[in-house]
Image (cartoon, rainbow, N blue to C red):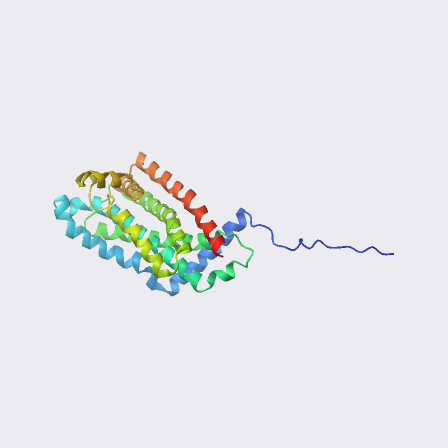
Length: 270
């Protein structure tokens, strides 16, 4: 009498994605997001048109009042505008995420055997291209109107890389807003409410020494100020100072806090 073999019903179930699978899936979804950028070039306006307009506008409006002339103001404002532009680009990350969730894109992702962080990290990796374009364009416009970075090519390259890392880390905050927000308009409103104080209550446009006491205290501990100071050290002097280390540490802390919160909120939503 032949014996019957019973197959394990769990044998064909997908296993938990490993680190390699997570990286591969993140890259795939990053490529998808890049294709969306190519087909909808208007989403690139904040990192293409804005650096051109803001660099010329802020340099010539505030240069004489703050530093006496435009040329003296450029070493202060160009790194500040890079921080401001990258932070503005982060806002779009949360808004686009909320739009995708509202239109049902993530309904398909949740039934696929993929890492839960990949649908979030993929678009953010693609956004590194947006941060790169914004940083390079801001430096290019600054150089065209008279800015001469003392750090040379290595210093500028380090500043661009730091700006990209800072943008990627801060984008996790706006990703969380995108997940918990009710709609894209609400996410944009909340994000701008956070973005404007972080940008304008920093050392991006004026030295903190010119601010009243309470504002100066806030500006000096503002994480955006830490990043902008580090970008200035790299671009203007080519120096890897303690401020660069603090900026890198701050980026790591933001990722360590908000990436898990975003994934947990995403899993609850989906």
